Length: 235
Image (cartoon, rainbow, N blue to C red; front, top):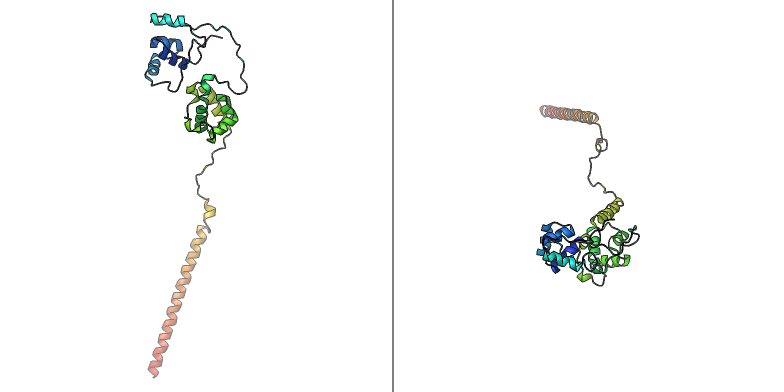
């Protein structure tokens, strides 16, 4: 397995703050773009990320840094690890370095707010915490709740973007399907009481009945008037 630098951005932050190395040297060593290193120096990038001393972690020597400061063309070389630990498949909660544990509650708060679909076990795998801590932060009963600020765990270096995306995808599988709220029209058979033909026939019959009633009433009125006239003549 090739030797790789741990936490490149945190290392770049430390090198910018504590050495006279050029942006190009730091960018090449940390596998970053020189403009990104410049943004770190200006405070426009990597905000909230604490620098990690590569000398303390055994990834860079003081002599190597001094050579780079004396010669801007010198390219920093990653130190060979003294002990190689075989990579094993991780089980259980993720181990969090001591330097990052104080940022873990902020990361938990960020996950709870931005990804409520995640289960406690998933959050525990991502940032290496306990269920009781997650519950305390969610219920705002954590001892430091007033001072907590949501911070992306990927930016803090507590987990990778790939791990976060994977857990979010897993959680999405168990979400209930979205129910459609759109209303549809009822079938015509349920909204029509009578067929159109029957309605027409009934209305025409009503018209005929109304006409006959009118003529009958007129006839009775005429007969009544004629009887009245006959009575007047006889008188």
